[in-house]
Length: 448
Image 1 (cartoon, rainbow, N blue to C red):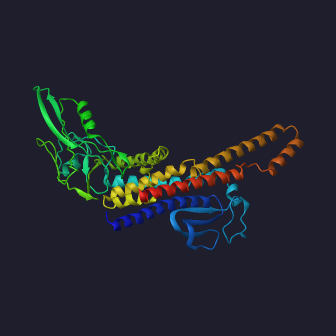
Image 2 (image 1 turned 135 degrees about the vertical axis):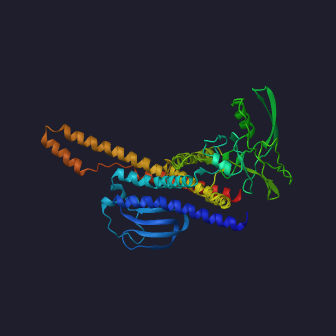
Image 3 (image 1 turned 120 degrees about the vertical axis):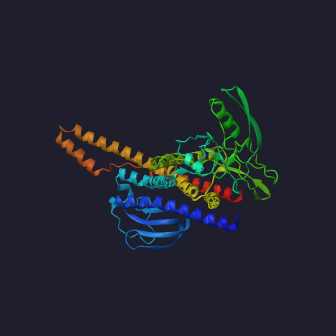
C-alpha cells in the first residue's frame, strides 16, 4: 500500500472518529440545555484552543487534538473557565442541583446517539443493497428457486442448481500472516436409487486462522464441508462452489476443478514485502425484502455493540496485539478505501456501535461510571427525603412537633453526594489508567 493511501486513510480515520465523538458530545450538549444546566462551553477536540466563537452564556471552540470533545457545565466541583470567574451562575443551574432523572438522561444521551447512528447506517446500507456484504457468520446457506439469493446467483453466472454455497475468495495485500494449507479430500456418496458410489474430488483452502481486518476467526473448511455432507440426506445431490486457492510458497498459481462440478476463477497473487498472501471473503447474505434487511440492521447493531467487550477480554488475557487505537483504526480505514463502499460504511457503523457500549461501561471516567455514581446519589438522597417525610407524618397528632420537623426538613439539605475527595480520587485514577492504555495501544499500532 502506498504512503499516500496510508496518510489518506489516517486522515479519514481521524475525521470519522472526530465526527462520531462530536455527535456524541452534541447529544450531551442538547440535553444539558433542555435540562436548564448552565453550559460554559461546547468543545470539539482537546488541548489548546485553535479558535472559538460565541459571546453569551455558551462558547464554542475547536481545539488542537482531534480525539474527542467535551461539554463544560457549571458545577460546585470545578472552577469556572479562565476569565469567567465573575459570572453569576444561578445555583439551581449548577449540575449538582439539576434533578437526578434529568442528569441520568444527560449522561446516557451521547451513548444512545452513537447507537442510533449505528442503526441508521446498518439499516440504510442493508435496505439499499438488499444484502449484507461479506457476512462472516454466513458460511453455509441453502439455495433454491424460492430463495432470496437465487436471482443473485443466476445473474452472477454461477451454477444455480448448486445446493450450498460455502465461501467466496478474496485476494489482497491487506491480509497478512495467514496459514493457508492446500489440501484434497474425496467425498464418497452412494446413490440409493442404483446403489452406485460416486467419487467427487474437491480442492479448497484448508486452514485460515484469522483475518486481521475483521479480527474474526474464519472457518475450517474441511470440517464444515464434512459436517454438511454428514448431516445431509444421501439421496440429495450435494455440490459446492469451490474455494479458489493459490500456492502461497511460490509464484505458481494452483486452481483445480473436477467433473465440472466446481466453479473456478482466475487468481492473481499480490506481492507484499516479498511474500505472497491470500485471504478469503464470506458470501453476501441476501435479504428477501427491504423489511427483512431493515430488521437485520437492528440486529447487526446489537451484535456489533458487544464486540467491544471482547476487547476487554483481550486486554486482561494479554493479547494486546489484537487491540487497536486511533492509528490502528486509520490503517483499517486505509484498507477499506479499496473495498466496496458498503464495507466502509459498515465499519463506521461498527465503530459507532462500539462507542455506544464502551461509554456505558461503569469505569471512570466513562459515562457508565457517571450514570452509576448519579444513580447511587439519587437513590440515597431519595431514601433520606422519604425518611424525613415519614418522620413528619408520624407526628401528625402533635402539630407543634410536626411544625418543627417540617421546618427542619425544608431548611436541611436533603440531597446526598459521594464525598468530594472520593470523587476526585476515583475519576483521576480512572483517567490516568485510560491515558496510559491509550498511549500503550498507540505505541503498539505504530511500532509493532
